[in-house]
Length: 132
Image 1: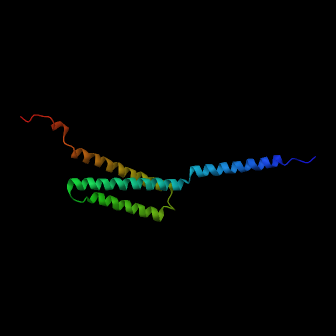
Image 2 (image 1 turned 120 degrees about the horizontal axis):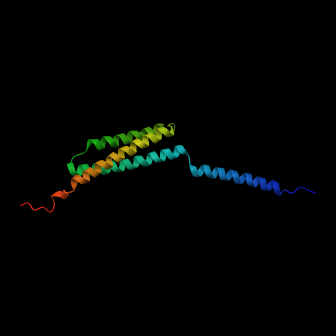
Image 3 (image 1 turned 135 degrees about the vertical axis):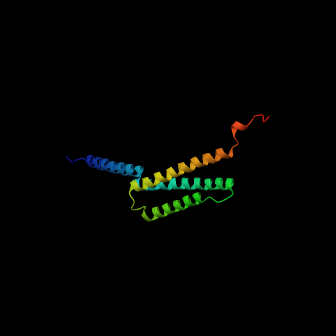
């Protein structure tokens, strides 16, 4: 009697299936560094967009260019340059810390934009009153 090759083929197929499964898990999870960089760049893009909106709003009200927004945009450029130069060697923690600071800055800009919008709206308390 000759041994059947099916158990050996089955074992090889099971091993190949496990290898494919492990590779699929790694690909699905992604590279943590790349994920951190992507989150950082998304946060930077969102802040930059809000800064441009803030600049437009402030200029519409004051009819002058705002140095605060220009300074913030310059800081964003510095952070992007830092990422370009050091992003490959930065730890995930450093990347996450920078992203967090960018998101905090965006939240502050959002609060300022809300205050600007409130200031632009006529006071609800003065409407409908009879002056005399």
